[in-house]
Image (cartoon, rainbow over the protein chains, first blue to last red):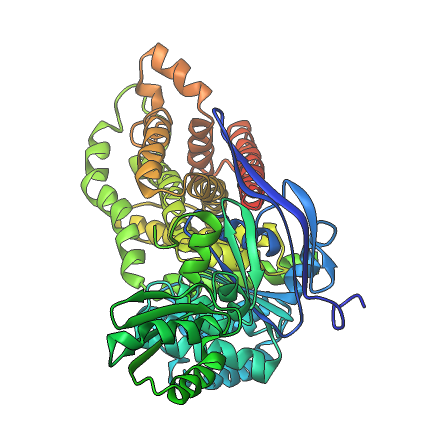
Length: 323
Length: 254
């Protein structure tokens, strides 16, 4: 279907972008392929300079791809960029409003550029502001808003024309932890209440982890892995269970029990502490405790540690995402 | 075409409303020509009888120069505003709308034309108090030329601002271009007073002919060769500047 109602919202095939200067050629994005389904929140995770924003700008028609193709909301990016713009919302990394303008004015002017009349723009704008808990900012200057409020206003503007997919470039950069968590809730609400497909770039692991249905990890212009946060973390080495026993002499027996768990690696024993990697720590824990009790082994502490996305990135690229 | 006008008007209303939020800047930009009028004009009256001084009284020679200066300098600094808008994400945000690319710049230029024309009218009003006497046709013709210059230099300034994306780079560029244009156009002192070599250099500068046209209009010579040459050159400069401005705007997505 032409409007992409039944198909994927984004299909990128061999998308590539190089930047040429007089002295060098820099490949920012090197032939990437991926799809985003309707109603998904997809996080595009990678360190600074990995190619996230370049990819996003290509999908938003702000940069022409050097090679490859993409359809966004059912429309070919190269053939009809104007129609793509009608169907998408874009929230730039650096904001989207002038400090001297009033919030309500910016919303209406932006809507008018999509051919929406002023009365409809005002009604939609007020509804969206209410949905993002910004009811009282209509007549305020944008410069008078807090960082979190201004970011939510950017999102309202990105949604005013009811796009099928919204692109958020580093949506929470520069916000305090409370505002970030608040914004995550609002982004989830976009999908749950409005059915909007969300494609966001981020270099925050916790953001990608907590917000995304699916994550694409990009590094040096290539997608190095993709999957749900859970799937990605499972590719590392499963969960780590650390058992602390009352008696050192029970350690070998406890290691034997731990080693028998599903997908377990060879246990490591250090005094009264036994460590074992398993496929699914939460699922293995009841059996482990039951078997320990059956053999009269007393554990005084149990810890299940799940791998982080940073571990995933480290495994895939050999360096930390924090570098 | 209907969409182009609609989008231009939206961008025009936005730019104008935001500019009016800071009326102090409007006052400051008007102060410079008024200071010239008050503090430099009386000097010219003393030399109005010097051999080589062009025809017309001192105010009819001096005020057209100030108007041209207003057209150039009033518009040549608008590029700083577009750098701020680019930094705030406004340009990218507008580029991801179905709005006409040309409208995104022409709406802004329209605002600049309106503001410079109003400032020109105020300047003429103040000059009247000092003793300027010209016909209503000359007032309208004079403001038309100012509007043309405003449009041309606004387009060029937006193009330079968006291409450089740095205030630190734009400021020296604007000054480097504006200063010789100013000195070689006879805005403050008529080039008829200049030595021959300076006159030859000045003749190459199209703005000198625009200043001559403005002075001719002020003398009531609305359709003379001097007027037609200057206005014709101003129109050509507007088209060239609009072409460059639109080119740079379009290249933002390349």
